[in-house]
Every structure is written in C-alpha cells, then in structure tokens.
Length: 214
Image (cartoon, rainbow, N blue to C red; front, side, top):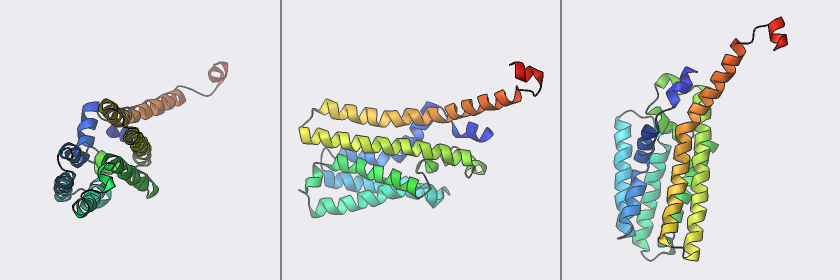
C-alpha cells in the first residue's frame, strides 16, 4: 500500500513532470512556424541539454527512454531537414513527431521498461522502483500515453489530408495530450483506493456465524 501512495501526486506535479520531458517537442512546435530546419536544431540542443542535466543528476539511463528517443529523433530530423529542405515530411512533421512518440512508448512497453518510469522515479524514493505495483502502474500509464500518441498522430494526419481548420488541429492536440495527463494523475489513486477497499473488506470479515449471516 505504501508504495502506491508514493506513486501518486497532485495534478500540478504530474503536469510539471511531464512538461519537462516534452520541452524539446514544444520548442520544435513553436519554432517550426518560422523554419523547420532550425526548429529541429533548437529541439535537438534542448533535448541534449536536458539529457545531460539528468545524467549529471544521477538519473539512470534506463529511466531516460523519452529523453534519449527525443535526441535521436531530432538529430535525424535536423539532418534530413537541411539535406532536403523541401521534403514532403515538412508538411507532416507534426504527424511524424507523434508517430515517433507512439513508437517510443509502445517500444518501451515491449522492452519491459515503460517510458513513464523515468518521470515517476524523479518523485519516488529508490526503494519503490522495483516494486511490482510501481512497475504495473507505469506500464498501464505508458499504454495510455502510447494510445493517445497513436490516435493523435492519426487524427493530425487526417487534418492535414483534409485541410482541416487550425482550430481543429489545436483541439486535437489539447484533447490528445490532456486525456493521458489526467489519467496519469488519477489512475494511481484509483488503484490505491481499490486495494484499500479490498484490504479493509478482508480485515472486516471475521470467520464464524457472523460472517455467514452477512
């Protein structure tokens, strides 16, 4: 039970923790409206700086799946953008970004190290990191993010192909990112409440006639 208590956190803390991991992607989204080539470079430098900061802080490599994936993606994108500035990928860079994030999330699940572990470990004592409850909760949360990335990437692809208005694209972003963030903030507390109810029911059910009459 105590391990589950350590996993949950206020919505504000969850938001800040996840926002940090997505800073390079936000940089790319903002700077990309001017020049996608330099936006990729700016995102790469931002991602590398965050990765280096975490390494210096002692964050283990297996807890930096998202950070490493981010650096690899923007390194490749920067090379491609400068080599082929008029590449069709320029039109679908948003779709490609969420497609890559989806691959990262699903891949981390397949590898048995959900990418949310790195974020959760920053607010959880080391003695809880290998607890089955901790790992299981992060696997489910990562699956929620992976599903959202996948659906968001598909929705944005449809928006591009159909020439959807900007407000619809923005709405897709908001819903696609807010939903898993809210789930991340609430799910651990739900698991804790369910287990507490089961434990309380078990302890309040004595053997004997009283139990049978109930």
